[in-house]
Amino acid sequence: MKNSDDTIRKQVKRAWPNEGNTGQSSFADAWQAAQRRHATSRRHYSKFAGVAALAAAIVIALNLQSPDEESTIELADLLGSTYWSAPSDILLPDREFDIYQDMPVLFESTEPAGGALL
Image 1: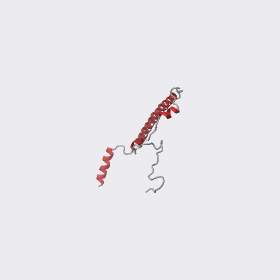
Image 2 (image 1 turned 45 degrees about the vertical axis):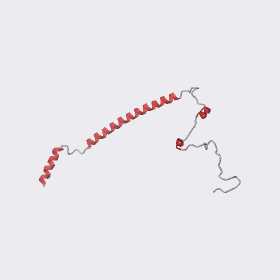
Image 3 (image 1 turned 90 degrees about the horizontal axis):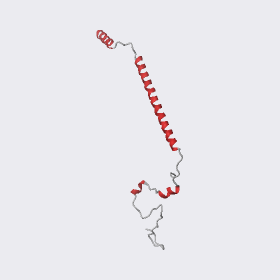
C-alpha cells in the first residue's frame, strides 16, 4: 500500500511540476483581465451615452424652431373634423339611434289610462 501511494505521488509531481503554486497568479491574471474588460465596457458605454446625448440635443434644437403660421391647427377645425368611436363598436349590432346623441322614445306596453305591466 505504501509503495503504490509513493508511486502515485511521484506521478502527480511529474504531471504537475508547480505543485506549490496555490493559484494566486492565475487568480490575479483573471482579476486583471476582468478589470480590463470592465474598463473597456465603461468606455464603450460612455461613448454611447455621449452620442445619445448629442442626438437628443440635435432633436431638441430642431424642435425648438418657431412654428409656421400654416402648421398650427385651430381647435374648432380639429373638433369639427374628428369623430371618435370605440374599437369595440364594430362588435355591437347596428341600431336605429345613437343613445349618446339621441334619446329614444320609451315604448309603453299598456294604455296610458290603466293596466299593470305583466
